[in-house]
Image (tube, rainbow, N blue to C red; front, side):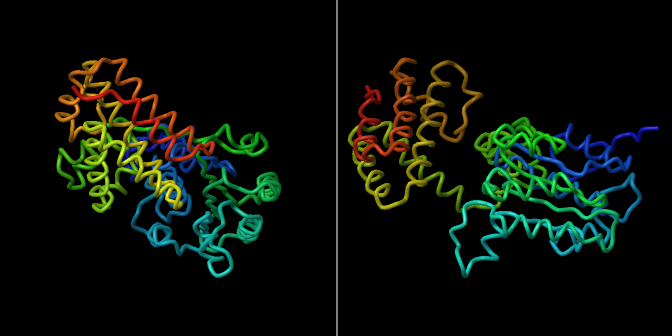
Length: 349
């Protein structure tokens, strides 16, 4: 007889009910696959779901109560010191090789060999030995073969939890050997409600829920990082000044081009992404859809700025930002790309 699924509310997971249902059924029934592949955008909660599943597998409570969160195994998994659960990622790889080369950008074959060594050992305290491998979509070409061999010949007591961004980006040989758990953005209202329950003020919770677009893990990270929120506010002010003043836009475009040439490319790309978001919000305001605005804290200023512009004017500005991102990606001269972007924006009337 199949065990009834644990309601998702008993797992410390917000949303992702389908994923929790599948995983809780596996824990209760004992019919656990040897490999699971968790996919979804960054900040969606893939690591949280995978690590909670690992806790449920090694939890010392009765099956109906797993993960209990209180037993020694649950607590030690959370602390990263339980012997039967191993986590490997680009971050752990870089930490281990810091003195040799801190510029690692792919999962190396040495890390996969470490994974294989870990899963070759029998569990010390639980029925399962669980290995979590993050950043699977950044495994080097030669390491894929070693990973594939591990997936093809896992010991009976091993559960591999792989984490990646896009399912389709992985080789079919990897995908076909894993149970796929796809995580999607959760409703904005649920993100905001959850943040409020954790002590965040309602207006702030709504703003963070909009900014993170259903990525609950990212929402918690942003809540805990007031410096990032302050940096975002400063960037919004700069961007609004650009939108409202053509001379300010040209001056800022020159500054962005200079720092882009000095190697701060991510910062420039993030600023253009913010401009895309603000122009998009202007488009939504002009189209009578203010509830869909992301930057809700400046909606009054956005609505006022866009009153004299047509939808075509605003759409052209959005497209110019995307074109600038493309031009920079193909090595167009930064000043040319950024100046071309801002001169296509509609002028305030």
